[in-house]
Image 1: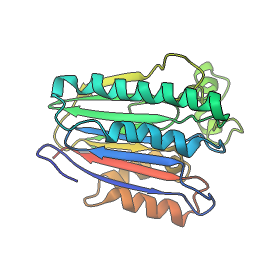
Image 2: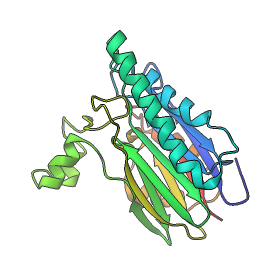
Image 3: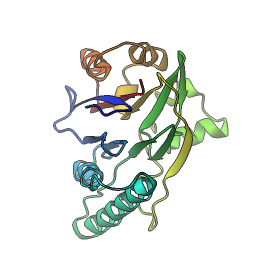
Image 4: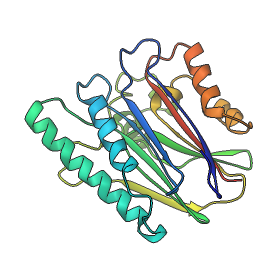
Length: 237
């Protein structure tokens, strides 16, 4: 998918061991909006949560003025959050999901997130993690009780501490902003990808031309990914 300012690649797969894909993604180059949601693993409502959130973004009208797009995305996600909380109250399905959103507007970017899906920026060969995981393992790393390497294999690594559709009445999305430069490459991904390759390898893929999202997915599947795998790559020429 292309527009005048950036182009994107995307790929998603349930993986060889999962019965369904609880990840969902959307690319809206007409709005400069890209998103990945990862329904909470093992929860009955995970797939419903992820698709509800992504559908809310996918159905935003294309004629929203640039200055209103961030607010429109926030309102769409907040509405999905309230709907999912009501759905859980009625069905007991525990419909929660992570979410990462990238909004590109001219020479600036905005990243919003909840949960442990991530956004990376590759710039001049350097990998920058733009998000900070909302997870129990990350809290332990931040407190110094666990090393980063240990956190990847910790039994609580998959426990998220914030999610769309979660217990909080008002959803809090963390935000990061910055300037976009030529040749910047953004990656939005679910944690299923991160369980199969490290940041150095991801950087190697992002430095290539062509559909690197499909290449990363193919590599993850060859390595017998234990989870759903999703990636969106956005390139600023």
